[in-house]
Length: 157
Image 1 (cartoon, rainbow, N blue to C red):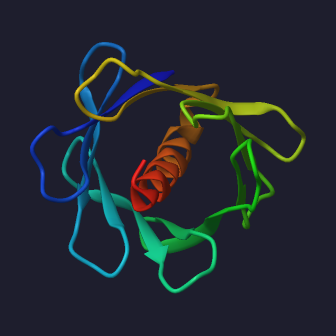
Image 2 (tube, rainbow, N blue to C red):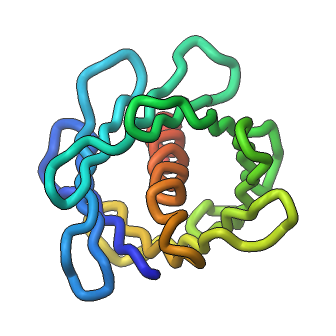
């Protein structure tokens, strides 16, 4: 399953539309005013199904991930010099990326790919393609991409 993750061009807060391969809106993401990033994810019917909340006052960036209102984990950036690396505390998944953080892979604890993420560089706004192996993992993969994008935004990249 492929998802196209596209930031809205004129938005004061982080706002994104996520489309399927046919161009249908699958998810909508709306940022809210808060200490740190706060992103709410809505399904095509407008029901809130997830949330990303940045923990503030931490040495390295951390983002709590909620599905509906249930905490499912925290993604945190690891200290590295060249290759960006993120960890998820709830299920052992990890994220590995390239030097510029444009392309990366989300892997499960056994090393198998959950999703591959590619940044499209010739767009006015942040645009990613998320290729999810199993459609059940689409929301989780999207939330990880949102957290990584928010962390990059915090650095000014």
